[in-house]
Image (cartoon, rainbow, N blue to C red; front, side):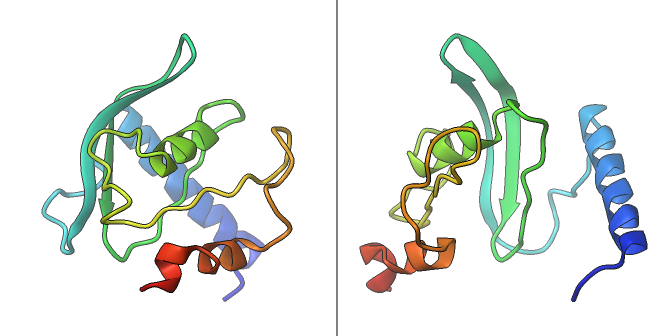
Length: 130
């Protein structure tokens, strides 16, 4: 389903409102929401001497889709790398949850390969064994 510009604008405004509520400490998501927790942890993440995330809560439900939004240089790629490298305390290890991080090659470094993300994931031996 392709969204119209008006639908996109409304969705972005809803997301921004949720972000502002979260920044103010209001509960955005009820802990009793249905579904199994994939991850419900508090962690800190740094890059060199810089603290990117401090006592940050990550609560993900199994079977849901999530997006990671933020301005340039806010730590999005660093967080995804840390998850992939099992460096986020409380995030399920690769023995429980298969993760993959494919460099996009925009502004950081060249892509690791010419495959699509789906081709990259299905080439993984762990995924093939499932």
